[in-house]
Image 1 (cartoon, helix red, strand yellow):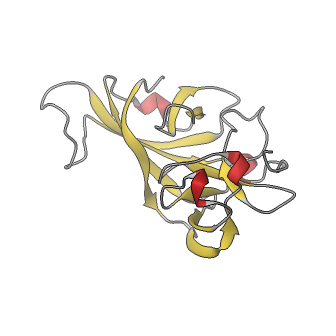
Image 2 (cartoon, rainbow, N blue to C red):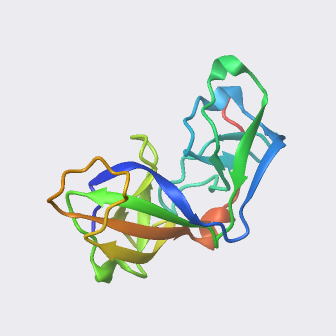
Image 3 (cartoon, one colour):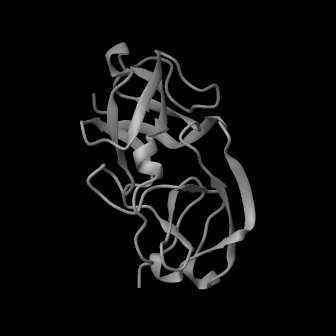
Length: 172
């Protein structure tokens, strides 16, 4: 199933060994800016973080972190706070426009890392996240969605292969 309409970035539902760290990873300026909630990768040659690009299992670089705060390249090569993720960290995503189905549970999905939503998109055999559960016809209590309509919650985790994918060198 495709989750065409989502509200904001996925939230962390279950920490599963995740840690919030600061003063450990510097931002790779050449990798570009990011917003809080964006998925990040750790580079192989500098150990810096930059926006993740691995939307399918055919990609490279992996996903190891999630941004705690916005970062602008004008800030330079500074230490940035991140969530260090594990494959047990579970995320929750609000969907609108199409209610998820129980058939989605256990399926792999790609990620939309380009539109700012960082959300599961299409179920696929080469996905990087595993749909672990769905809640039908549910919405967050703070959602500004209208009272009627199709909506739901999708729970997902990063696959171990995504977390452990071969890291690539820093963007230049």
